[in-house]
Length: 278
Image (cartoon, rainbow, N blue to C red):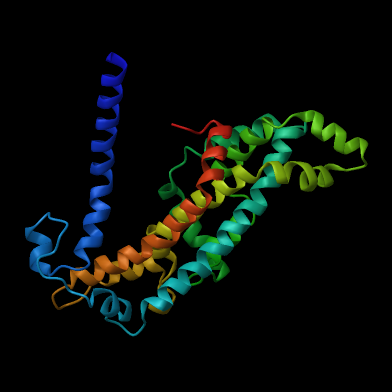
């Protein structure tokens, strides 16, 4: 009986915590169908007066471009960044995890140390560099650095995962005639699928939600990603139609949430295997 009581209390607490965490998302969805007055006067999830035009009018936006343009811009910026991040981080992590070379300890220490460096510290030098290269108001400041393994978190994550792969598999591959690249492609890469999927999800969500960097590097409204487009929806002289803003926020949430649920099996496995679980 005591065990049953503990289970009831545990699941009861988990249910309450789950409701508290999910409620803001449910409220945002509900607010996309509410009037401005009801949004600021009621916490109820059920609107008393339903507005059905929040999504259609919100999609058209109040400016020259629709949210179709902003969604397309975000995908153009995010997808190459994610793919190049994974493609560049894996070989670097493989080198740190499997090879011995002069200065390895120092280099890996620098990689770990860069995790503690706030992004805000390097904003000015990066801006000056990209300005001299003529990359401002393009997506190159996001895409090109990703091709050179500049995201230390993913290198560290993949190193942890590769270290858990038995070295006997590498030796077997060498006996079969595989060199270092052959071992990486034929042995390490297939086994790293959970960790790679975790990297894809993390990077996709972070870049999809990034506001500060696009704000600094993108100046043309035509090239705005969703994060800037949603903020721009509030920069109007007339009364803000909050249901339209909430509606577009709901739609902006769909791709990363869908990606997570499609890949959650590999994500959980990858995070657990790399020791990054909380």
